[in-house]
Length: 367
Image (cartoon, rainbow, N blue to C red; front, side):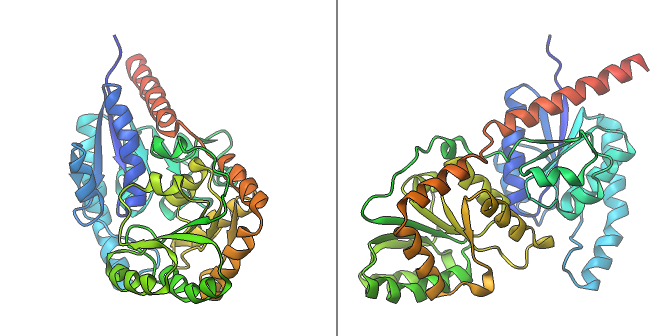
């Protein structure tokens, strides 16, 4: 009879931390296990996790990186109580293993897991691990990473390349040969990007004057969508501006080129879909990890990188025009992106968690 375990899911604050953990939690639930999240009432986990039917143990904790001293002092004051609460819960429940996506929310449960000798697995999708993952690198049993260079931050033999859990629809996207009209998807994420919105707005006169055959689909975020939509309609260019794209895999499938930020989730989706991209790293990301993600894509020939301060309408137009005139390069970039794809990341994470839980159970039985 197969054993059923309780697993701790640590990581929250942003959707980028929560959504991959949810994919892994669903895989664990499919296998008959119980997945319980630790999170805060102010992070994305407060809305996303209960909506998927998973319980949450609430803690109070804030960030440390890039914040003022008042916020840092408040976070440090919250830390002991949150660690104590998580440790007490783990002492009573004795979970089989802990899975962490990193982020400040993962700090207290990971410290508690270490104190309670719970085997821990960290999934680190960025080229440079985040603050929590770096600080806990020496005590985790396994590290599931997306880039080879990330493994250097962990002890030998701990890290393996698994990729980031991505919806299967992205992997199902077939390679697309650009036609006579280049289809360009521009997205700054669900909330949009002021920099990309402004650069897109400034690029439209250049595109129109050059009579560049492109079709633009632009996710601008709800705040600026209405104004941008009206301005775009006045240009007469082919395409549309939306506040939010509900079916992003479908948008990827129709795109010949994607212009976006370079968070771990975006990079994983580009790889899964095999899409060439122009990446504009968000300059205020913790530890500048978006730039490192973008450079990792650039090194294999999957992307062009334009720094945030260099991105404007003229530069965006030049990037699109250059790639529109080199269809072979676009196809090669797409193949290079897909070479980084790692399907089955959630299944692999679940396999590792089950393996560690069984080992811990055997040690407990023999002890």
